[in-house]
Image 1 (cartoon, rainbow, N blue to C red):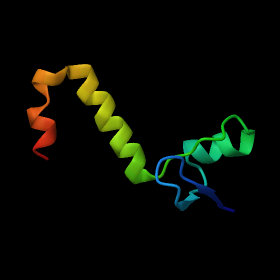
Image 2 (image 1 turned 45 degrees about the vertical axis):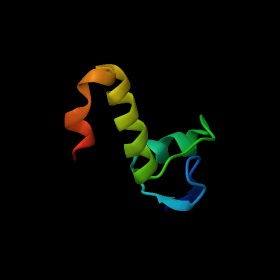
Image 3 (image 1 turned 90 degrees about the horizontal axis):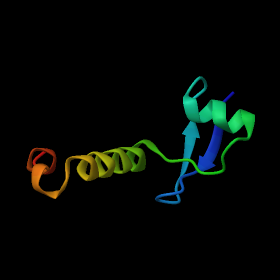
Image 4 (image 1 turned 180 degrees about the horizontal axis):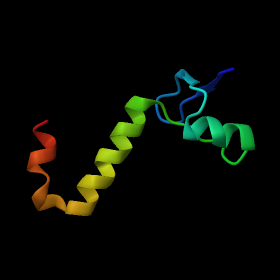
Length: 63
């Protein structure tokens, strides 16, 4: 059984696939913030950019 939740980033509904980490959090009721794949990738790349600093991100932006 899969659940549909609203993405906290883009406010679109998406499906939580059974067995995923977000599905597990939903079943346990531990969080009310969920992110779709696209928003999750944006957050991850933003964190990588912040980690490497402003001068070392040219290889990430060119993808």
